Image 1 (tube, rainbow, N blue to C red):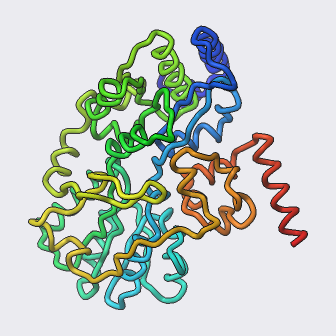
Image 2: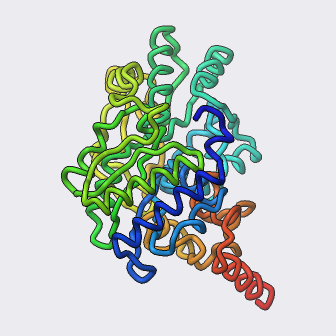
Image 3: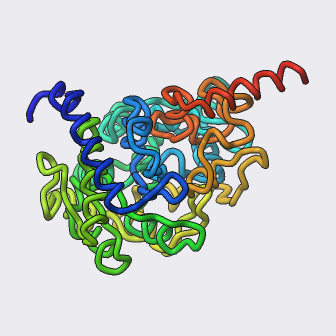
Amino acid sequence: MKYVDEFRDPELAKHLIREIESLVVQIGASENEPLQIMEFCGGHTHTIFRYGIEQLLPKAIELIHGPGCPVCVLPMGRVDDCLALAERPEVIFATFGDAMRVPGSQKNLLQAKAEGADVRMVYSPLDALELARQNPSREIIFFALGFETTMPSTALTVLQAAEEGLKNFSLFCNHITTVPTIKAILDSPSMRIDGFVAPGHVSMVVGEEPFQFVACEYKKPIVISGFEPLDILQSIWLVVKQIAEKRCLVENQYLRVVERDGNPVGLKAMAAVFELREFFQWRGLGAIEHSGIKIKSEYAQFDAEHRFTMPNLNIADPSLCQCGEVLQGSIKPWQCQIFGSLCTPETPMGALMVSSEGACAAYYNFGNLPQVMAAKSNREQSTTIS
């Protein structure tokens, strides 16, 4: 297949669903004891709800929505660090758009911009580099975040800045890594995962090899998936097929994009510029070893954490916000006590409601489960009464 509409063919979708249903019967899974399959990537979560995939699957399969949205897992303290940098008078703070509304302890970057901070939305770190060229008397700080998907472009930008000898460009580095996070989920005593749908864009960079530990050490099937509806249905079918056949392998459904060994140019740039942090703090998951990266000492002149003073505090989410439990898969977004009432895409209290890849935003915008609508209705009524 090569055209978008082919990846959304309803007849092929029906065929895959019938195949999945047959395998579920063969396995003996039930609604009371469903197979639990985690899609790690927020992009997959978005597709699942936009196209109603969860409602099409047999009830003997439960999809667990993982922490694969980099904006969503950013802890509140790091947002406050962003604000401290952005509010410096000499700074132009450049960021991707979906990070502008992530709440800090007092405000977000959009509110800081309204109060006079020079915060600018960019589409690429190279846009921030161009700001540095155009504004030699200002300090340009790029808010670098994302999984391995966005690391190569950030690394290549640093290498370009070094080649040009730019003195007024730096990164506030919040890039995070996928593999230690999956390991932390698998090691959690409260989680029972039967298989994984692995992130396609991350795999485009790192390849298949980093996910081998899931199959070899933890004996769980894992399938690298694309982002169209049929990609996800086929990937779920492949996971369930492995379970039925008692196999545990890394399979690559996204062959049209993902190479076995990833992207060597991107990996080389990442290795040149970045190194692992000992620990990185995640919203809802706590400190995870080697789950974040920092800039190597030879490029310290481009490290905002090295050049500027920041609060660097650990700040807990508001007590009403249950983003952490949603990120861990302990509860569904609609089970959060403020979902759809105090927390909406227009007035987000938690980061999961901000990003289009956040599970709460996906549920709110596309969810048509009866319990979602009931939760919204009940909370609207209680708000009106109070």
